[in-house]
Image (cartoon, rainbow, N blue to C red; front, side):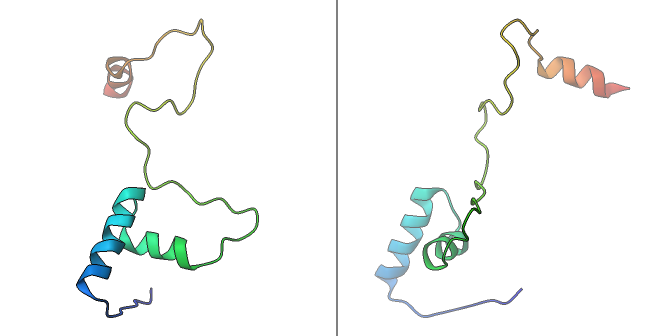
Length: 76
């Protein structure tokens, strides 16, 4: 993968890092997203899922699956 490097003033570097941090992105990903055009119909993937976020929601009457249930199922 090609690597780019460029010179910037310390205050500019600080601003770029702060902006990337505020969006929860690496500096590389922040620069890619802010400089490259977004392809039509293509959604950008999120950097990470936050703990506790519901990814798949079951029906209201479905039993709750706990970490202990998963650990027990994977034990064998």
